[in-house]
Image (cartoon, rainbow, N blue to C red; front, side, top):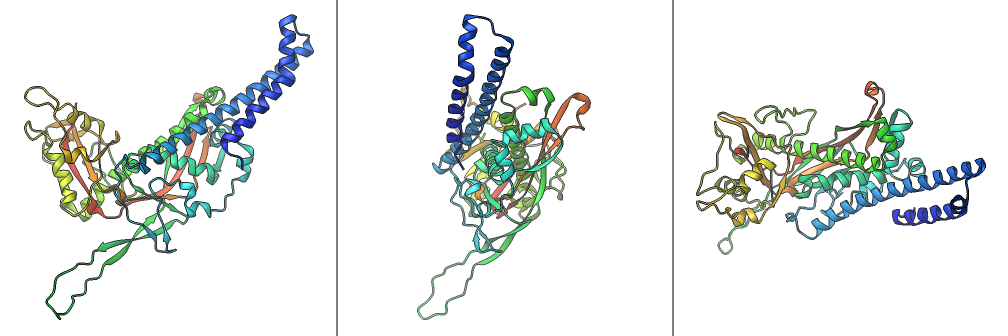
Length: 437
């Protein structure tokens, strides 16, 4: 199959040839005299052909821009700019093969995706890209369509590039079955000095499985019928909106899945949601959930970063190595505005400066006692220990009738996968810190 750039060059050549054959001679006539009715019809046809080629070129432009974003994200990770901690090689214990993507590896290049029997050849032949398929679904009827693996992988990678937990280094595991078992080490072997000729005490590592079980999330993008029909960049806008919606919900569930109270309006019962970091820590390692004072915790002049340092060292004290901090923009703003007694901005401690920092605005500001709408949570950890299972294939569904009374169309993308902290002790949460108003 030709590359996108090759298709782009071919379309440019075809558009130029079509115009030179049919449009240019008529344009020269128009400069000298009025068209005859037949010439008017031929010129309208030539112009329509030219505009159709231009629309296809615009769609390819959008696709190349999305691929550029994905490539930039991959290069950023490969270059170490996100300080992703060295990860374990995760093994699918059902197959004995490597389970996860490397930090800079495309979803489509993983063996699970390459071995998939792609049933989307008809779609690939009929549409130039995923955006064209979205537009066709929106303007040509109702129903649903399984996105071909080629485009599905691109949408997954685009969502991955927009997800904060993925940027922080979460491990992506392509799932070619509803349930996938990933082997993990639960106990390390130990070493000890011994007297000459004395017995060696056996100390074996222990293992178990993390089970990823596919669950479904759906993202709805809505627009007017006229917008879907007329907007030059509708394809790019819709695809990027779907990717952003998927990424945002992944971030929220990775942090708060299983939480139904105590964090503002968040209510993510398990099931159907996966269990995220806070719920996993509450259930299995409560000591790594710190803070949560009755009236929240306000920062104190002279020790302004103490709580964030306590958060980082909660992970370090458990022999884990945090690589990134995730918080809300309101909490980041609160710390960025901190000044000393002379009004000079406070310098971040080196232990904070050494971590990558990511903003997730789905982290709420909530009320904690007398701290009204300013309590927020901060998460630190080795994010390579967060497993995100991604089921192969995405389904698109068009909703014409639901919004017919307002002249709108909805496009729903159904994503399937799971989220599991592989080692909960690799994470810690500081609850109810004071955020900016």
